[in-house]
Length: 192
Image 1 (tube, rainbow, N blue to C red):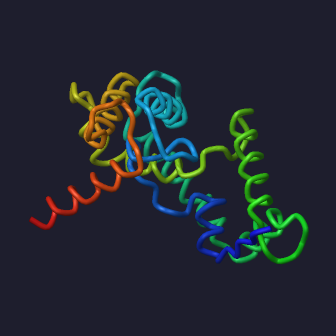
Image 2: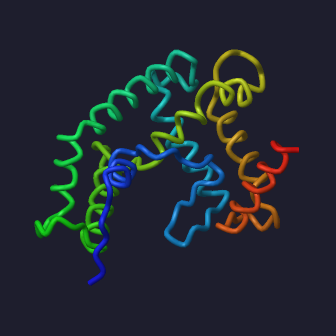
């Protein structure tokens, strides 16, 4: 069985979403690395529901900042060495001081179930993705009617616009290769 040694940074990234996530349209939704327009819309809806804390159908700057503060608290707690050791111990079910692929897969499955049941977890990198997407420049860009808040329709439209920029062959699916090409193009534009 292949064993995977995970450093504290990787463990933090995987279990507490400490790694910086890619933009919504570039975030793969399945192990195959392919994302569809329908998946982008669903992810935008899920994230919108999490940020619209007062359930009025709009995301405001105050809601975005409140969610961001909660994320910072979780990340600070997860960065604690004792907390990381606890997370590692939870993943290392056979107590061999290594996390095998099977242990990792079981933990991922459990996190997905908890998220589906509405409990803690299940968000993975979405917490970090929300940080850039639902805040700051995103709020201004998605707020097409300039009313200082984002409706679900505006959030979906912004997510699909990003998706379309990355879907280079316009087949309604974004592959790993397209994400890589889009990153290279953005990098070339920023340098030039």
